[in-house]
Amino acid sequence: MTVNENIKKVLKELGKTKLVCVTKTVDPPRINEAIQAGATIIGENRIQEFEDKCDHILPCEKHFIGHLQTNKVRQAVDHFDVIQSVDSAKIAEEIDKRAGDIGKIQDVFLQVNIGEEPQKFGFGVDEIEQAITEISLLGNVRITGLMCIPPYVSPEEARPYFRRMKILFDRIKQDSIQNDNIMQNGNIDLLELSMGMSGDYRIAIEEGATMVRIGSAIFGDREY
Image (cartoon, rainbow, N blue to C red; front, side):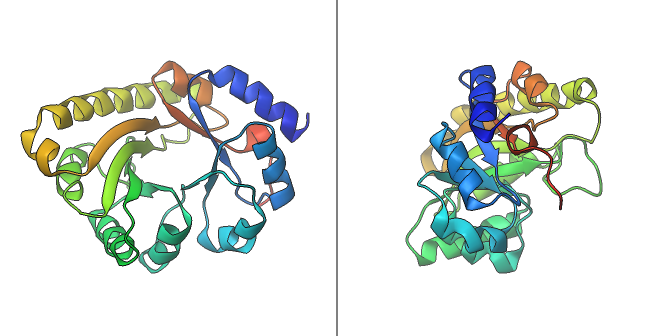
């Protein structure tokens, strides 16, 4: 199937769930084919790769979804509408600083290590609520979602992690509404739950994802 056909098939499956079209290693002509077929959000993993091709990509919403290093924060703030992979207070503070330099309010998602895997980035399940309280007080960062990558297991085995993430998301969203300090002083509008990729996005949607990140199901398997 072509990129055009794949996009239309995926969008039909997603319904109201938002698609982030993952464009890692994909060249601009194929990205533009996806945008012309209906993709409105693209997600990139690498700053340098995106900088090399961004001038050749049609207008769309741009999300950074890879691990963000401190020395790449300035470029991320310059180029991306949303940074989905904020995995530490230190990175959030650096984003706040760089966004402040250019008068921008940077939308971010906080990454949760939902499988509590030591090799993965992200806030622990027992850390995320305190992190939200602190990061929401930064003047140039707005928390608009949570993101997770479950352990590398079969789609059905990933279901408990997605379910746990949805429960956590709902609780935090409710708590933020009820917390007067956050409501009055915080920069938070928790709208999106980003979870699920090409192999397990159907399960993620069943468990409450509002946004999925899909690459190979659209562009085919890629060589890294």
